[in-house]
Image (cartoon, rainbow, N blue to C red; front, side):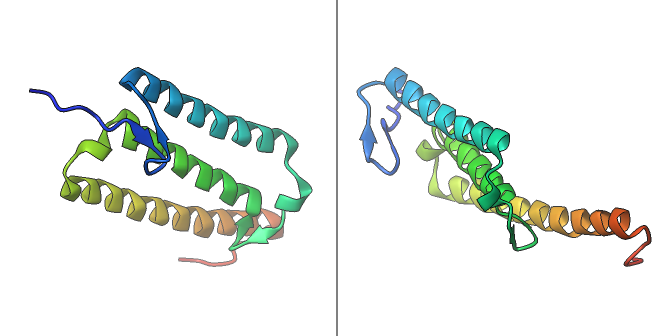
Length: 126
């Protein structure tokens, strides 16, 4: 006998009557987040162009919104919420570690390449 999927999102703040309604609700949420990303990408507000931890604040916003979208796609569309706690932790912790590692590589290598092109010489030699 198949079990029913949980029909709420945002930690139970929004509840749905059927799986179809939930799918549409999550899709609308993901569409809104994507629209925000597109609008920010087109407008590129000057207030978000300042440096924060080695990158523009706008880039950090894009990274955070992308992680939010990935979370909801995995959590609701791939039914991760209905899995065992140990499997959820294994997937989430591995993903968080990978994302942090990729952000570190992006900041390290991106900064190095930027300085090479800006100054015209090798700044660090590994």
